[in-house]
Image 1 (cartoon, rainbow, N blue to C red):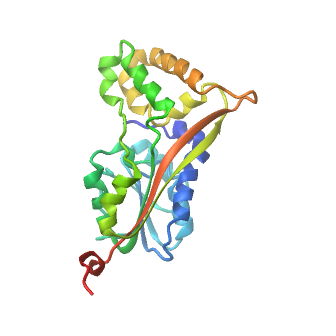
Image 2: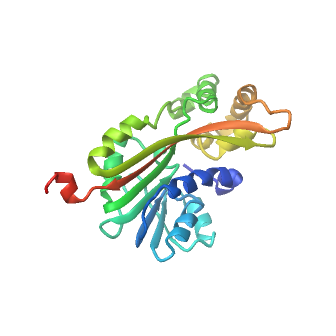
Image 3: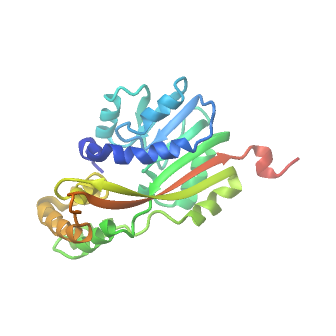
Amino acid sequence: MAWSPTTYLTYGDERTRPALDLLARVQLEKATRVADLGCGPGNSTGPLVARWPDAQVVGVDNDRAMLEKARASGVRATFVEGDAATWTPISSTVDLLFSNATLQWLPDHATLFPRLLSLVRPGGVLAVQMPRNFDAPSHELLRETARDGPWAKDVADLARSAPVHGPEVYTDLLEPLAASLDIWETTYIHRLTGPDPVLGWTKGTALVPFLERLGDRTQAFLSAYAARLHAAYPARPSGVTLFPFKRLFLVAVRKSPVQATGEA
C-alpha cells in the first residue's frame, strides 16, 4: 500500500497519544536494543529515543514515503525498510519490541504474536497497540459503501471485518510464554474539526487500500461514504465532531528459559 505521511499526520497528536499511553506502561529500566515495528513517519519512534537515549533504536516500515518522512524528522534512530510479518533483528533479540497501530494489517495473529515475543530477550518486553474499532460506524459504513456501488467487485476483498481479536485471544496466545502480561482497552473520544473530519481520518488509514484500487471511481466512492459518515457522526453545535475510537493494548514480558520449562 502507498501511504501518505502528510495525510496520516493530519491527526498526528491523536495518532501518537496511544503510543505514549502504551510506552507509559512499559516497565523497562534499561534498554540497549529497541525496535519500533511499523514506525510510520517516526512519530512513535521519537518517544522511544527520548525514553532510552543511549539505546540503539531502529524503526522498521515497508513504506518508503513513511521512511523518508521518518528520516527527515530529526529523530535519532536508524530507519530501515522491512516487512513487519517477517522482520527479525540483526542481533539475536531486542530488549523492547514496540508496535503502534501496525499489526492489525497482518494476518494469522496466532502465529505472529508468539513469533514476535520470541524476538525479545528473556525479561524483555513486547508492547503492542492496535485499533479494535472494526465494528464502529466508520468501518461498518466503509464496508457498506464498498458493497453498494459499481466498484463492489474491485474492492470487495478489502472490506475486513475483524482483523484484531478480543483480549482473551491474546491472553491465551501469550500467557504461556510471558512472565507477566498486561492487556487493556481504551476508547478515545477524539474531537475532530473541519469538513468531513472522519473521512479525513480514514483517508490516512482504513481507506488507503481502497484509494489504490478505485481509480476514476474514487470521488464517487468518497462522496457516497462521506454522506453515510455525516449521518453517523454529526457535528456538535460547537462544530466539533466526536469520534470514538477503541484500541487494544498489550505489554508482555518474556519468560526466562527456566520459567518457561518450570524448572527449579
